[in-house]
Image (cartoon, rainbow, N blue to C red):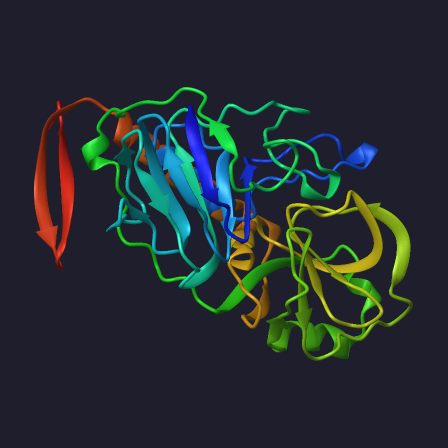
Length: 337
């Protein structure tokens, strides 16, 4: 009992926080492209942050609940509706057995995430439930979802603790023009001074050849000082490769384990989700930061998750409704207040 796939959307797959420790044998980590949206959705329904969710790309699916469960949607706005009633983003909602949840085309952004309380009951392979599409491994039968699939819930719940207050403030709109902060290197010394200036001062455009492996960019050519090839070395999530064409490629969640192109920089962890939400035609610029700045931004984000988890799980002595700018919020008063 879980979700019945009526229509699958363009590309819908089971993803979690990723499959790590196996790049040495050539296995990509996979996992959600926008880890921030995935983690917020999981926190809203009371899951562990990296529990498996559905990642939906560009055009979402139509799904029927065959069992009661709580769900939340984050990421791109695909106009989600439950039995024809619009579903607010960033809020825990209960769906009853028989209810139909339908998504449309992304109005903003590129990828939306559906989390359900208790997660999905799919095999854990090499420490992860994620679908590695290129290897037909993990997730639901190693592939994207298709019409007629029945995706089982692992531990469904008709409600979760403090469900009335499990909602987030409206999130900033997803932009089609983003600046990604990067840490320079490790092969930035393989580019000319003009090449580095081009990389940091130019605007690049996301092409339609982008996928879960890499975000391919077009724009001014980034000039190498020597050959673009290196002895193959490891590739992390967010590495910016520049092959001989001079056009950067941001390595995404299904990146290869190693590669032989120069890497001019690496997108910092908290900004990779911005790249994941860029559809073809979106604009990207790069801004260098220090390792220390990147680490602090990452710690700040972890603190944000912890604060939300604590707020949603604490004992409350009262819940009150208030309306601000036409939107109704539930405010919880803790036992100590």
